[in-house]
Image (cartoon, rainbow, N blue to C red; front, side, top):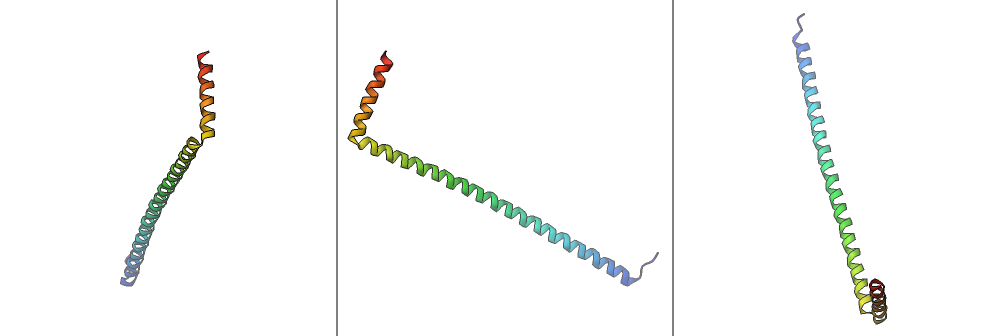
Length: 91
């Protein structure tokens, strides 16, 4: 069966349209890859922020321990506890 030139031209146009649609789908897939990469980067940043929060908490804990060490009453209690603990270990 022989196609007329207008039918062949229309078929070629449809194939061209399909190729363009595949190009758009490919572009969308690449965009999704970029978004996925960005989401992963945001996850890493979120993890880093959480780690910074932990470090901040540790720094605050060290500050509290430092404050406790400066407090003479707590020093005295710690000394008594240490002596009692040593005494119990020697038994």
